[in-house]
Image 1: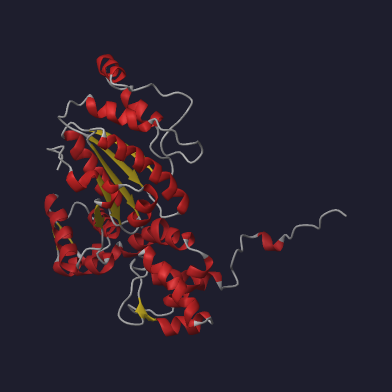
Image 2 (image 1 turned 180 degrees about the vertical axis):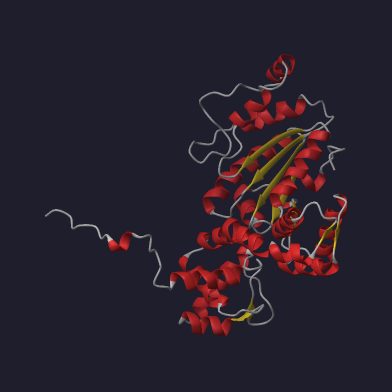
Length: 358
């Protein structure tokens, strides 16, 4: 992919997918490939943003001759005025000439790859990103060879395009990373074991596929934990797959599922609470209406928002389901804990605070 600077629709690439689906790993693979091909790689997260200080830190690592050449091409050293994507400071039109200079010094043999992770669909973030997109678009029009890859849970390229008014962004490539199918999950588990010179018993493989549910992060955890359980054995057994189940699910609960749930609004949480009462694959919208005690119209509004988030897709007419495996079970367990008499009991209940002085 990086053996040419004729990027076409790849000037802007938008990658969407749920937490733990492999977006960050995908960006890392892209960056490795770009560096191997001699490209300049700039990496940031949306919360920090691409700033001139980020670019300057890369430039500072280059030779004096390289920096002198950049200066001749119009690159200016970073000063107190930070530009680019920085929500705490005003955006200044300084990124465009710097990108043009950085591209020119490459002499057409390679380009610039910019990856921006953790992009959100909030209006504030889109406003910041649109300014960045415009700078990059103008730099490309000036001859710079640049590829920008955005990644996030839900990257609304249409909304971003409305703000940025960029013809290049309208022609962007969109990638949606999703769960693996059962056959793909089996193949990944088997191939990973073979690369290490081990095998997986058929029953153990079935258990690991069922445990991971094709969710890449859980596939990685389950296979790693099963491998390490008895690493000296030539084969991963049913005992290994069984022994690591709780540890793998517990890790996903603490690192992914709890964050997904806590990031939602209180009404969205109530919607998911209602869904979690079903311990099978899908929930009827009519049941959610009853459980929430609200109107169908009210539920439909929040259903649309959750559909856009990707966490709750439709599952047939009048039904929805969870996308993330084990999320329903996680919510059921949390509701049980929160509803118990031990809620928030950290030992201080026996020592109540005294009244404030009059």
